[in-house]
Length: 112
Length: 114
Image (cartoon, each protein chain N blue to C red):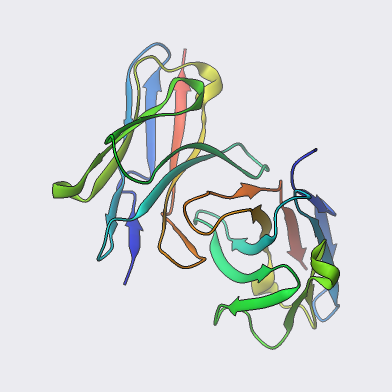
């Protein structure tokens, strides 16, 4: 069965500091992996996606993520966080079917 | 193209009432999905349409839930005899490709059952 785990429920970082949000997945084959961001009361916006090839993928808003098959991980990173990055972040996995499996999310707080 | 549109944004209803939500996908997307998101959780799959055909339904979609997508354009999600446990954000998404394409989500309809 496929699943996504986001171990950190909440993370607080200072503005300008670097950020890494963790995501681990369980799937029998190479999955399609995604990171979405959700602001309060809003829908989800796609930050980046991984299908195959280069394991370091670049996304919007200066985010990047690295796929590590050996660790079943797809961690999201940003070198310098801005106050506007405060939001909920969801890692998701898509199999060859038509369903996405989301993690429970990581809430990011940015302090001045 | 204004993206995926959902109406209403918020709905408050009394327990036992019926509610209906609407989703207008991106016009060239033939795939449409409904997800439910409760507080503190990630979205959970409810159902999927390819054009007008409803091809997958989650066991979360009880008999009180019904979804339609007439003519393969907009979709409606109806909940009959609402219960307090139905309170959640209902998200619609659309895509033009299976799996790997990623979804475009709407802003959701927040349902509160009192």
